Length: 115
Length: 110
Image 1 (cartoon, rainbow over the protein chains, first blue to last red):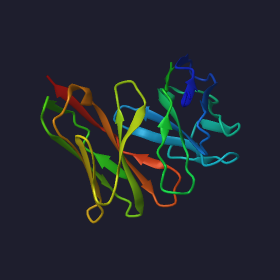
Image 2: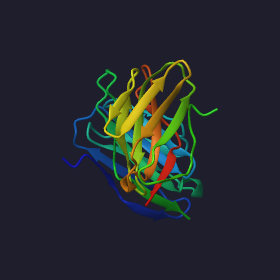
Image 3: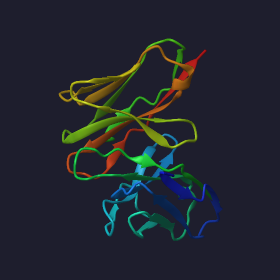
């Protein structure tokens, strides 16, 4: 099993450009998440999908959109990139069956720089 | 006030020492608690869950104090490989998301 995979690993954008970060998991997990991590800020939740067909805003959703394409894939789109979106982006998945077992498994991250 | 707060450190301790971190959470409805470990430029990974009665995994001991709303992590006989950032993580009852502290950076020196 590959676990959680993310593409690309690195990306440099110019202000105003758009891009989509891809995430896929092969663990048959119900829930998927997108975080950004900035120095001194910890991990902040951007959007999450509790199950296929649903998405919800997290702590910092402005400037982003998401699509839960199917149970495996959850993409994050930046429509018009801004320098404030320079960050490391992590995708995660969790089995979340309604029980208390909700460990999240993370992908390797995407390092995004917006000039 | 942040929902989960940690001392960011850095903590620099000699190999073989015992080190402890604390973390406080503000939401009394918090139900599940975890410690994650994150190596430099890597993704976070679960280190251990924290149970009400406290739990131990080898050199690592986690404690939960619901009355004071804090959790702790104790590392005994620290190794160079323990150098990492340790993230305190909390889940609120009914919420399908985790809240992460900003992390405590630990460096073990030879």
